[in-house]
Each structure stands twice: as C-alpha cells, then as structure tokens.
Length: 69
Image (cartoon, rainbow, N blue to C red):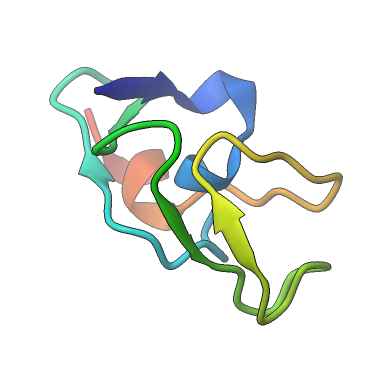
C-alpha cells in the first residue's frame, strides 16, 4: 500500500525503522499496511514501537523519499 509523504506519518520519517521502500510515484512511501510497526530511533518516541500511520511533531522526511522521483 502507498502512503503520502505529505501526511507526515512515521512511515515517511527518517527515524522510523519499520519495513518500507520508496514508491515509484514521487511523494509516496510503500508499506505493507498502516498497522505495520517499527521502532522510533532518535525522535521523541525513541525506542518505542510506532505504527506506520502514527504521527508526531518532530517528523523529518526519510532522505530516500526526498531523493526519489
């Protein structure tokens, strides 16, 4: 499934360690589903498991998404 980067969710944040990949279409990240989870690394939720659809005020775009397209 694709999730829009503009939503600023964990799946498109550089600090999230869950399974994902840049989508072929610019501005999207490919994830297994919105409930897939991964650890936050270095953000406000550092060391906590977060779902792909979660959000926080310290989101930083995943560099691979900023370069895609």
